[in-house]
Each structure stands twice: as structure tokens, then as C-alpha cells.
Image 1: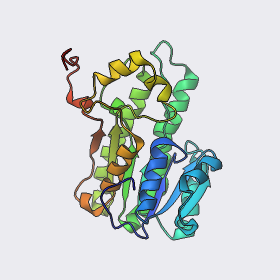
Image 2 (image 1 turned 180 degrees about the vertical axis):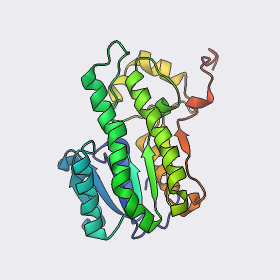
Image 3 (image 1 turned 135 degrees about the horizontal axis):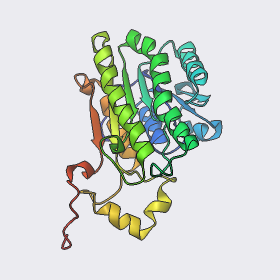
Image 4 (image 1 turned 30 degrees about the horizontal axis):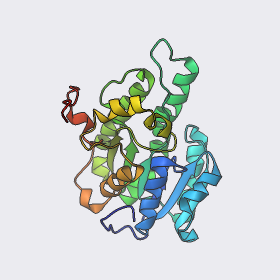
Amino acid sequence: MIAWARYPYGGTRVLVTGAGSGIGRSIARAFLEQDARVAVTGRRAGPLRETVEGFPTDDSLVIEGDMAARIEVEDAVRAITAAWGGIDVVIANAGLSEPGTIDELSDESWERMRSINIDGMVHLARAVVPALRESRGSFTAISSIAGLGGDWQQVGYNTTKGAVNAFVQSLALDLGRDGVRVNAIAPAFTSTKQTQERLDDPVFWSALRDRLALDRPALPDDIARAALFLASPDAAYITGVILPVDGGTTASSGTPRPLAG
């Protein structure tokens, strides 16, 4: 089991975007372990099927689609509501990071990051809010601590994640009286197949470790546990929150760890 706690998710209808690998896969499987019904979306059906493998087929729905494309987002939401009659929980995980300074940020790179990180988030929210109003459900965006401050050579990514955080807070205000809660999880650097090469670089790992109070990078399961909590009845009075799940990264002012430590 990914989570230590048990939540009352039996029959809950959950949508997880970007669920073919990494954080999205862990979140989808965490909800499935809690007996939720989970629809997973992504650009390739094969990895999505791997995500739901081993769980009852009646509890999962695989929807191939590009979450940066408005029509495909709307089609995915229609497919879920047609199959299950509504949506209770949305985890907006699909995202993209491409490094570069402002001099290196090409129009193409900016378009790719903006289209999935910001435009895709807006398309998804517009498509699912009617269903969430009906179910008095919750919307959780997977943002990043990169949206809480700056990073070297990440000007485009930082900008898009900062926009996500502001979007979440504004949406929470607008939907609160409808009984819909909106929050974001802000992970720090997370260990996945895509990031493993950087973690294997001893120079990079030494610099990263200097920022981590818990002395390890995040794992996708760490983010999944936070997602389970924020969507649960235990978080019924939490909305508009950007929750860092960062091993203490943002607790630091940036001063290096003492050498003796």
C-alpha cells in the first residue's frame, strides 16, 4: 500500500491527468488502493494501462489524449461522466519542464510549457467544474516549489508554475460557496525515471542534498499521500492552499548546510 492511512474512497470517481508514469502513476494507484474508481489520462495508452494493471477493470478507465488540447480535455471529461455519471476528485498532474535562461527560452519551448502547464490547467478546470459543483468535489493541481520562487535556468518553468499557484487560489475563492475545494501540491525535486540521470550525477546530488532537511529526494509516493489527504473528508476545511511536499527545501533561506553536518 502506498498510504498508511485508510480513506473512505469506495465508489469515489477520480480523474488523474498525466498518469502514465512518475507522480501521476503513483497518485492513480494510491486512489485505486483505496477502492476509488480512477480514470487515467495521458498521451499514450500503453503506459496508462500499466498504471491500472492489477486492479479491477470496473474501477479504472484509460483515456488517451493530450491534456494541452482543449477538445481532447473536453472529450476525456465527457467520457468519464458518461461512464460513471460524474466526477468527485480531479488531480491535475500533467506538466512539462524544459530548462533554459531567458536568452535560451525559444518560442517553441515556451509554447510547450505554457500549453500544458497553464492552458491545459485552464481547459481542464473549465471542463470539470460543472461536475465538481454537482458532486461538491475537489480539484488538486500538482504544481511545484518552482512556483514559489526562482531557480537558475528555469525561467519558463518557474513562470508557468507561479501562474498555476495563483490560478488555484483564485479558483478556490470563486468555487468555495459551491462546496468545491481547490488546492495545489508543490513538490520539490522528485525521483522518477525522467530525473534519475540527474540524481546519478554526484555533483548535482551533492548540491541538491544541501537543500534537503530530510536528506533524500521526494518519491512519487510522497506526493500521492498528500493528494489522498487533500481530496479526503479530513481536509474538508482546506482550500486555496499551496502545500509544499519538499523535504524541508523551502524551510531554508539558502545558506549551505554546515560542513560538519
